Amino acid sequence: MERNRSKRRISKIMAGMLTMLLCMTTSLPVWAGVGGTQGAPEKAQFTKTLQYANGVGLTTPNVTFTFNFTKVSLDGLSTSADFAAMPTIGSETLSFSSTDAPTVVGSMNQITKTSNDVAAQAWTSTGVYEYQVTETASGFTAATGETMNYSQAQYTLYVVVSYDSATSSYFVEQAYTNQTVNNTGGTGSGKGGANTVDGNYNFLFTNTYTKQGGTTAGTNALKITKTTTGTGSDQSKQFTYTLTANDSVTGVAPATYTGTITRADSTTSTVSLTADGSTAATFTLADGEEVVFNTLPAGTTFSVEETGAASYIATYSGTTAAGSISSGTGTAGADLSTGTQTIGTTNNEVNFTNTYDSSLIPTGVLSNIAPFLALIAVAVLAFVAFAAANRRKASR
Image (cartoon, rainbow, N blue to C red; front, side, top):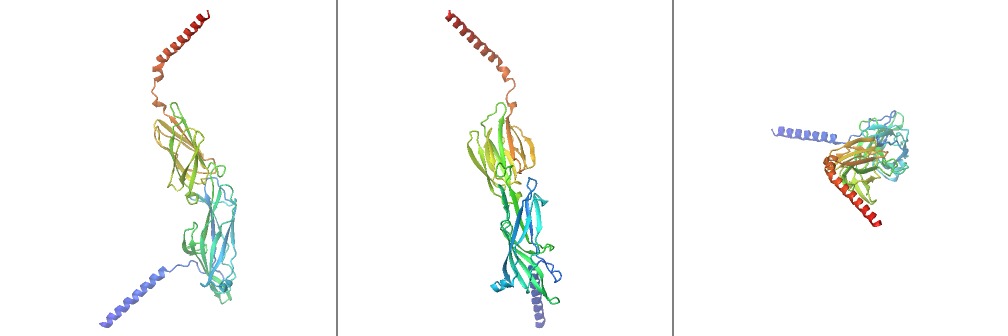
């Protein structure tokens, strides 16, 4: 019986060890790559995506991106001798120009290009070769209002070199990457393939091109103006507005933008908003006043809402990236919103007009006071006649 208990214990131990082994194998990182041979070595190619807002008047800029490869280790060792045994991978460049036609992906235009096979080097020994790959933040000459947001991604490229005895040559059997930093500078997404045909491909750099809205870059990205009209209207009355914006559709990190309010007496003040929708700009405008934001990227979406004012009917019209926006008319005392609009490389302007509700003026007022006006007129004429008569008598 004791022997049977021992056998059962051994069986449980073996089963436990097998379970642990299976769990360990499932937790091991999956090295991407389909496996190269001497005749068809594995490749290592990165891709570069240049993107910018779609439908706002932007075109592909002229730019050349440069990528650098820094030696890290050979078989985990990083002495000068190890570095000497590692091939030097020269800088790679990818160029884009205005002739490159983009593909529309959501709200963005995208152009993607693939590098040469950076693993096609003169390998002289077997081993695991490790390189760090980064992008140089250069290659673009920015005009006024333009920005190139370079990729901050960092990859470790691993190249596994094997030996083919039949041909007495070395070849790349495996190539994979480990993204340590992502495109925006955050924590990387880990390991993936270095070959574009691999389903686990993860060797991509993304750059975003932005340009300030408005016909002239850096000025009048968005102007909001105010007109008050109608019989009985108060030209000095201040109306309240709320402006929200979202520049995440441009591919850049939400930023804070400042607008300048110009009053009827030419004095100025400022108002700010955070273009992720978290902090709106609230301000007031009276007849003849305006607020101008000079630096909102083309592609930024926005909405302006006027708070309803008793006795006034609000309307709006304007021009944005989509051309003339649909005009809107509210009802007396009610809020009125433009809905979501998009900043473009055009004149981005929204004009609000408030008209005093003439229906509030009682009908017949003028006819009711007409007799009194007639009496006043007669009195004035009598006074004039009396004064003239007195002058004639005095002259005699």
